[in-house]
Amino acid sequence: MSIGYRELAGTLRDAIQRGDYAPDTTLPKQHELATEFGVNVNTVRKAIGVLEAEGLVTPVRRRGTVVRARPPLKRLGTERYAKSKWKYGDVVAFAADREVSGRDWKPTDQTQTVTRVEADPEVAEALGVAVGSPVYERARLVTDAGQPTHTLSSYYRPADVEGTRLLDPAPGPAGRGGGFLILTLQGLEPDTMTETVHARMPTPDEADQLRLPAGEPVVVLHRRTLTSDGRVVEFARGVHAAGKFSWTYTFKIPD
Image 1 (cartoon, helix red, strand yellow):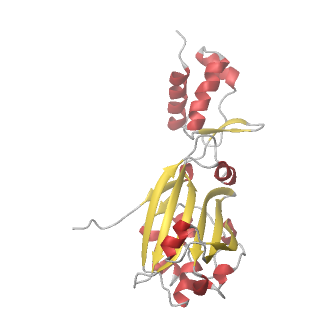
Image 2 (cartoon, one colour; image 1 turned 90 degrees about the vertical axis):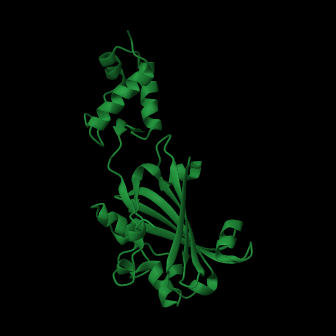
Image 3 (cartoon, helix red, strand yellow; image 1 turned 90 degrees about the horizontal axis):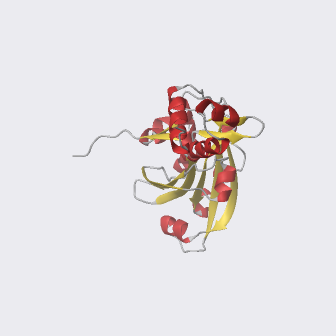
């Protein structure tokens, strides 16, 4: 009896997870799979569609159906912001993730656009300014081995960052220690952070910018960075390709 496309998808999924089809290799051609499993090509096409939606494979022109690379990058929690990295060293947050993941990185893996914009309601509420007030937006695109992993846009009050390298659009971190060290030198040393994350499907622009396969969601990050006296000095919004990261948090359990 012929199997259905869901059963075929399950068989292929198991094979991928066992390593029968290695990362960055192609699945057999659809007509070959149809012959192997005794089904028609339409069943194979629908089964592969299921795997695409799960983020296990992606179609690549002139290659075929490619098994996506694993494992994802580790995205550290509190450890990525340790002052030992940026205040006393020269490792910014995205580089800390690369190093713990055993990946090479270079400053130009981060590009940015700096723009003076009007604060939308979310930015205004976070920074404690009126809606429509001028703020600086520092929008970054971060890549790993040439492939986009996430975007991150930070917002600042003009008085906090004018005349600093945070407004320099050159690729890479904003000098030694990055933006957090610059804020520290401005008398606005980061002391506390609040991060909020949720998942959703990407917009068409996000899917294009992050080169997402069909069906892959994004993880949205909102970050508030505060000084020791509770002043918010940065509000950031990030959009991460869900399949590119595993999120790791280590903390002491509160009493």
